[in-house]
Image (cartoon, rainbow, N blue to C red; front, top):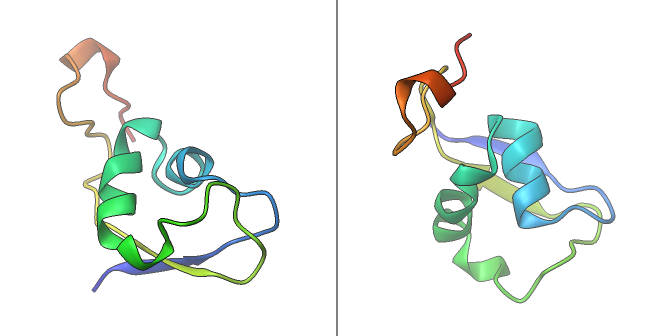
Length: 70
């Protein structure tokens, strides 16, 4: 079951990816799961955003020495 994040005033797609998933590289996954909110670049408070399930310590496409380990 995907997690959900409720936006705060001023959140942006990449800041949500970084704060909630640890890497801006996940921005496209969040945007794909939330197409109904594509009109936002800067979010108002109170929007529910679904988050993909990401295995801790992995960043797809990153070399092993750049991957974050938990």
